Length: 211
Image (cartoon, rainbow, N blue to C red; front, side, top):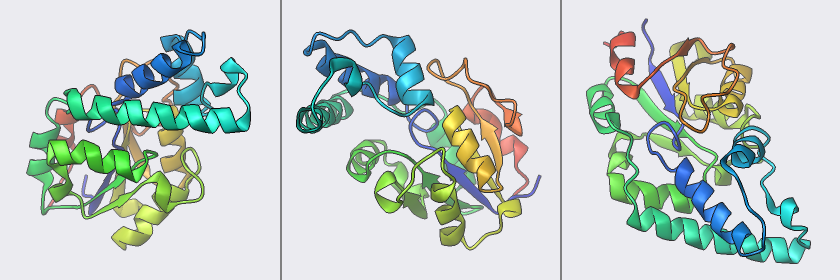
């Protein structure tokens, strides 16, 4: 299978940060007397992408304050916890210089930069599309359409790698082939639309024919 470009999702694919994002949200909501379960996180954050602030009945101003508190806590977790996905560095190294490589993430750019200041993976990326670069995030196709523009490639020349239903939906809506690597937080998802469902990132180089 010859491809000219690969577009990586970030959280859950290259780095195991979704569990830290859950923890940051759980702690802030716990301070408001709300218990955020893993099941609720999967549904509200990973599938519906509506978040959980409504569970606390907050006003818009209070919601913004708590969101900022969550972001600060998440940043602190990113500074102190280990999160690189096993095998990711080796795969990125193996594909380096052989395909156009970009990241398409729903993360804030400051969180993304903090993550990869620690991993050192940024040297492998020719471009990054974060939530700060688009008006509509996944499952809207806009982030992947932007990646196609930046790569100067056609959809047929590219493959996206995702871990979630919303990421898969975004990639397919942009006309891309999409491979999914489910995580502990997304493994109950409906991935029937995926072109491949993989068990580990280490499987990817053998599936690509690169010149």
